Image (cartoon, rainbow, N blue to C red; front, side):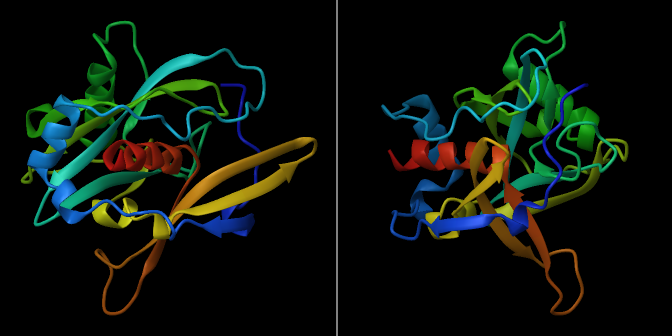
Length: 232
């Protein structure tokens, strides 16, 4: 690929504010049955984030990501950290997913295939609920987020060429806008704005150690759209 985002550390970007004034999604809305009902009877709503300012001149390409909600004691969102060797969005936290292949039937087929290829998530553990609106990234990918419930018991086998880490974040944390931060940074004549949702994770660490999972950019934008969909 010939296009890449500018090299910078998003943690150092100016923070415009946080959204603690907005209502959070209540626990009773974050159950498997509630999500099944919401996607089967979707409300009238408007996505908040759908188009990023474009970097470079590559042609648009269709893609899909899986938004995998693991059905543990509470719903947990499974995320990946992309390999630092990838040509686009390297090192960033992302949903499993990628470019649409000619043989894919639809966006769900793309997302499920990519999740299997990237992290080894078996299709028979996944229950697709529905899609969120297409999100156009700054690298010209037209991404369809496919939201799904995932039955526990799977064993992941991450592909080290694509994924450097896999982890889970409570969905309730991400659906609370008090954890949504708005940022801005100037790149020459271009002003770019985005969201971040930093999460301190100690699930796979020892003692009181924590690792910051800096969720931002397209991943955070799609999660914000999920928030708007659930709160509508």
